[in-house]
Length: 141
Image 1 (cartoon, rainbow, N blue to C red):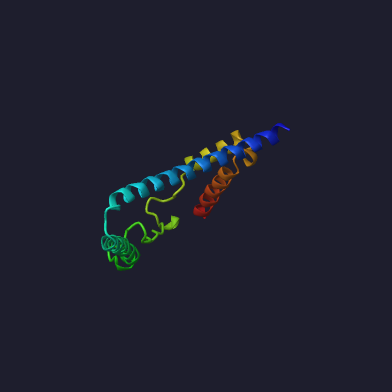
Image 2 (tube, rainbow, N blue to C red; image 1 turned 60 degrees about the horizontal axis):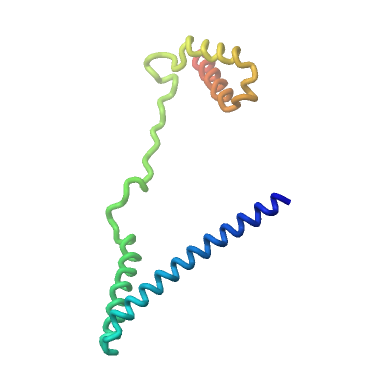
């Protein structure tokens, strides 16, 4: 029964928040409308039409610019252009011999011996350690 009351309380809380936001928006719209009414109450009909045309022209122009501008842009953002992936050198083509040394291989073996339940504890790490062992054995051939 308590979970039902908590669910109802959450719903009423979100409804109250939505109502508060809607009331705030309506209040700001009414305030702007009253301000514009007080500003233009002495205007003649012709002046009102001119103001309406100017508002439509300005906001329509801004809308057209906002729509057309992305198509005209020649300066592309470098973060959107994919960069080529550098392919690492093959292990066998390295100058300094083995990529994985004997001491590194021994460290892997010691770690696996210390942690016998590695498959359950950290399966991703076990995969990485197995991959290191495979690379070590492949470079020994």
